Length: 168
Image (cartoon, rainbow, N blue to C red; front, side, top):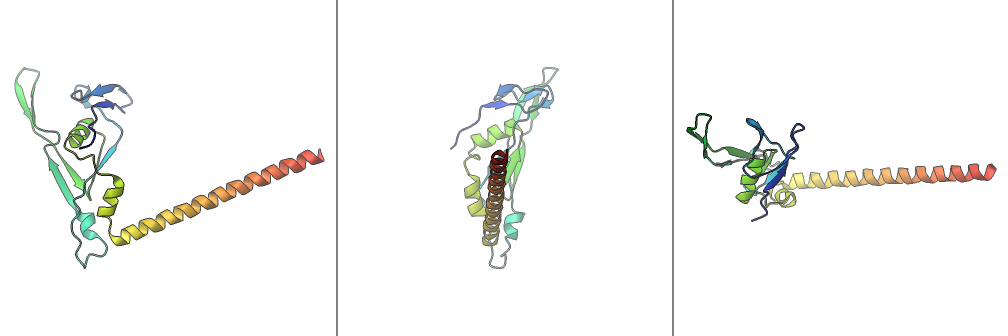
């Protein structure tokens, strides 16, 4: 099981405070927000031979119950009130949240251990993997073209400065 985050930094512009487990609110009724975190799970369904486009992957949903778990709290009158547990839904094997309490409970139960790379290997159809490779190749080509243009522009500017310095 991976590391469980126990110290957070609120991203709410009116709060920005550091806080720990159990201190889930900036003020009563106003929950802390943190930087978004994406969780990945490896629950990809099997693809049938007819499903070459990976529709089963796109339609997959997994619900994780009791995150955060049910708890008892005292209300303003001092009465114990049951707060039901929550749930999160992983769509296509991913779930993103800014809620630090959910982050804590998902990590505590081992949901922060899967990397995006491993999830991609499991969850993408062969066609999608090929499309990702093509996109990556196009992005690399654009980067090379941009860097070549920048280099050529710098070289031209340097030549112009040298020429101007010689004629002056």
